[in-house]
Amino acid sequence: MITEIAQIDVKPGTEKDFEAAVAKARPLFLRAKGGKGFELHKSIEKPQRYRLVAKWETLENHTVDFRGSEDFTAWRALVGPYFASPPEVEHTETVLTTAD
Image 1: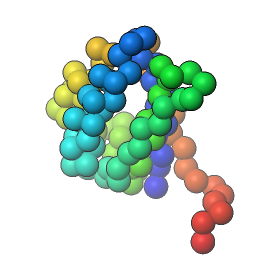
Image 2: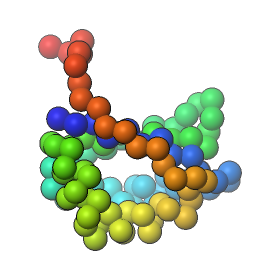
Image 3: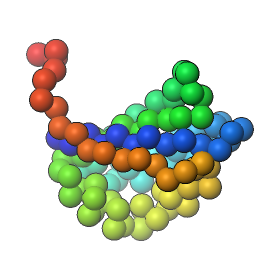
Image 4: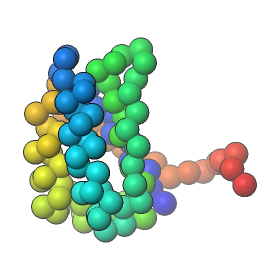
């Protein structure tokens, strides 16, 4: 399982519109090949900063399958207008957990 972490800074005053756009885009992630869902987190200290945490079966499910799809184009059309700068994206894999 791969975790995608995208740090997204939005334009001041567009936070609620951005959140609504992400909610509208939910089906795009749910039907993505290898997609296992996502969470959107908002920073308390920096309210214009979000982290989108998405789960993928494989790295390629995100970087090739999703990013090369029409759904990715639709995602960017929905949320891109709110970006203050390009998102910073990284991928991680779990090496330790407290869960049984």
